[in-house]
Image 1 (cartoon, rainbow, N blue to C red):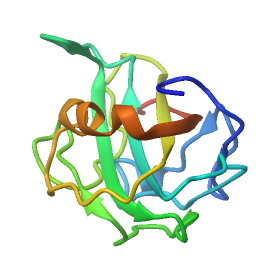
Image 2: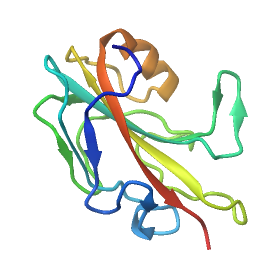
Image 3: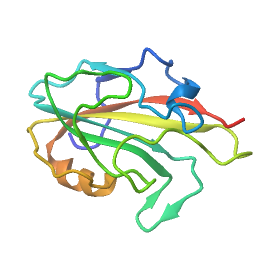
Image 4: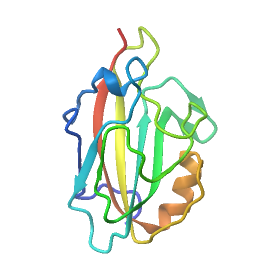
Length: 158
């Protein structure tokens, strides 16, 4: 299937689809990852990954745009929920230059940004090394992606 939307449903008890992300999950608050859950994954799913990307960020670099806030992978198929400030999985490198979650914190006066939380369902149980940036992680798993979908949250400073 590759990188096409599928029937997977990604939700958070902390915010609605296209709703405002609560401050505690942002760089202006506790800066902890929000709770997430997913269902309706494709048959044959053996693992999951989650990442968060802000396409509204004014950052363009070779081969990429926006800002990656979170890369989390090596989640077994039995893991279909993540608690707030999760310690599950393997952490990749965000565009903050560190492993783990970095919450929304758009530039002041830049308006509302949209944060795409993605879940990927894969047909394998990868053992991918820690601290990969998003693009390297996606290169490794692309042939194994069975389905994906997203939950979009918004945030504006101030």
